[in-house]
Image (cartoon, rainbow, N blue to C red; front, side):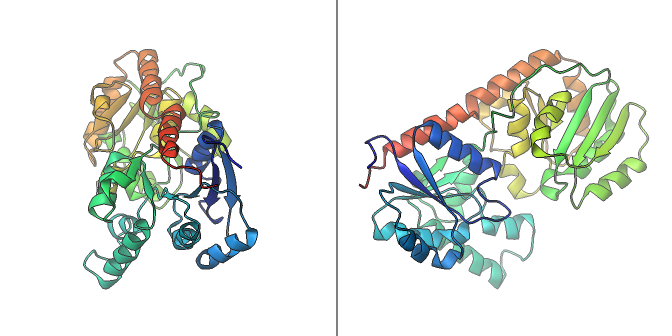
Length: 359
């Protein structure tokens, strides 16, 4: 039996490429547990039949069902099980399947039969949730406008960072300032615009490091091979273990976010931005509506127009004219104020207050 404040939360999501160990999921689970709620993880074998499996498992005294990010296929069965027991359901999709396939990957056009069918399917799914979580205010608006969610049923909770790993720490000073891009080299992140920015750069000498892999890495390497700028030393590094990433970020002086020109790029704040700010690193990234307006005047986050290599180069140069330790402090403060785990916990506390215990 749970108390009036403590909840038993059934975390309903299958294993896969993005399972319970995905950073967003780990952060939400940690915040829920920090609030003294009990999280019972349930990874059904078959999504469509998961309500039957949950019934066989005979879960007791469940106050809330939480379907985590990317698990659209688990939502229908979770809703059937929850509705039968009058248990509220929260869905934290992080992305829209329609948005990813149609707008980001362009697998088929918006006016195609397949796109319309996908949109209809996803609209029905989102309507099953009592609360839908969006990671940015732009995604909230997208869920309302495109997927038909009721505005008062969509709650914004930022992705944040895993603060046991990502936090400010003093590192040896670089003789040559290092600008770090780490990511998956996809169009949304715009790595080719970073490579093209080398031609435009005219500030103090820097080391530009590309860390990671993906479909556009080879193109970035070709661009760099054809570019000659003695002020920029460029290196490419392969992926490193996740637990080594925080120190790699802290070894740099400036971190780069995303610069893609697609609609989806405008709606997201990527993991890398949260992680860099949590480590106290100033960030250069594209200007989009996803960020709190107060960050427009924050030197810890430096916005440029999407898809503009010259703007990226100029922003880096301008940052290096300033006091980097002060910028690092401001970056950490902005993270703490707007994106921290504490911010998530406060939002979760208010959310869960609205759900009465069912047992």
